[in-house]
Length: 298
Image (cartoon, rainbow, N blue to C red):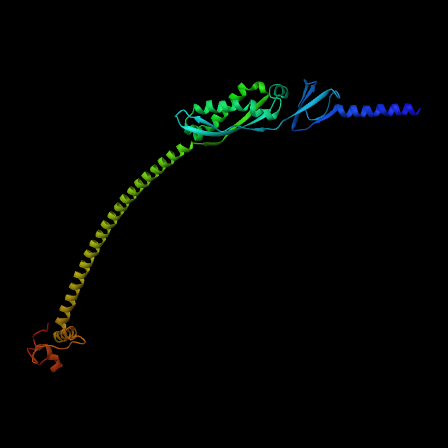
């Protein structure tokens, strides 16, 4: 009886081991290929618990996610004979695990198998475009063209190139110096042209301003002369009217103005005769002394 139970326990243990060895799990981001003695048996793309023949079948897992493929830096000559140092990369995903296993086998070998194909297409496509198309005008369409051509020629590899991107596209070092000097000369020429245009504009503005100043000054001078003439005419009219009303007061007022203008502070020396008409109001407040009372002082 004890031997029987031992036999049953052994069978259960072997069954558990066999059950464990026959089950495997495929995750969401994986796909699997079941191999029997190295020969493909089944491709599994559905995640979950899966089964295989224990101790006979093996399972290879392949990533479902988009993976990166770096290419080597290479020199490309564009259609306009401009040389470029191009550093690019591709992004791919495994679409057929069976073909991928048969032609590539491991993800680590993608660089060796598919990398030269991507690099060859980069040289071919970029070699048919100009420098400006590569770096600016048609960059997106050129990258799509490279990816489409790689997929067409590499369909047997069981993968799909979803995108190709240029990380860096520079001129060779010796060309960079020449380009820098040419750009420097272009900037100097532009600066000279802009400076000349600014000087011409400055002269034009200055000439317009000078002309406007001359016109304004002439107009102001004309107006001031007109106003001065009108003022002097009004003054003469007032003087004439005042002289006509009170000649004695007018002569007295003119004499006071003459005294004010002639006798300055700090210098009162005058060589005149004491009987001069100029001093008649000094001798007689009524202005009757010193000379002819009818003569107006100047």
